[in-house]
Image (cartoon, rainbow, N blue to C red; front, side, top):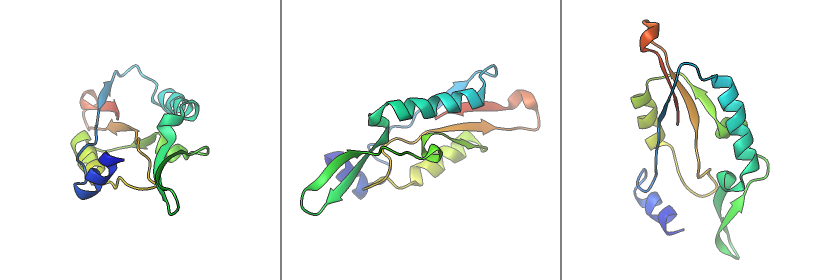
Length: 117
């Protein structure tokens, strides 16, 4: 809970971000479906911190999750997405894990890339 308080004071600190480049042979839709299933099967990936007035801060697991939060598909440049993600709120009641499949599309198809974030 300590890191949540620190992150509230300094948004973006104490947050890990990883971007894995996907090979062109990866089936993006299959990856998304598989990751959504991984999230459904692993409670830690559906964890939130909430404030209960009589108990204080507690860690809870959401049983029904939104596939939007599990693995969204985004079409933008990696640097832009990471900047946007840094500005996303982290706090009480919000997901502690965010993921996305990012597709960078370029006029020259050879420059197009995909990432799992």
